Length: 94
Image (cartoon, rainbow, N blue to C red; front, side, top):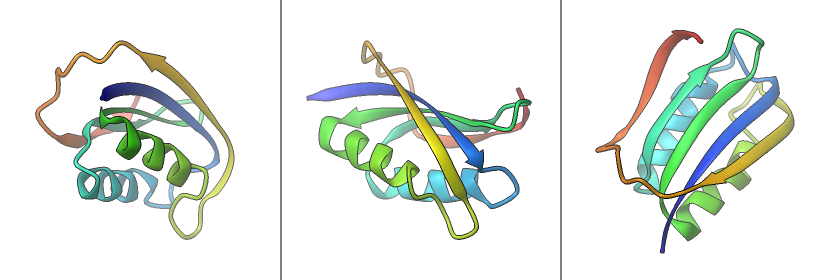
């Protein structure tokens, strides 16, 4: 079953290669979507793919790359849309 998760990660998650790490881990799991930095210091991501892979990625977001200190991961499950062809980083602050 395919699902979609809209995720907001807070803590020390910018300036620690969190987006690049997220992209690498998502691609390993066959997920589509994107990751970006928010102006308030959080990282936002959308993961679409097989339920098990999305859930695994959410678990990993609680850990993050070396140097990250994750304080919270908020997950909003949305209707699966299948709108992405790959997983990518969106650059700049949003």
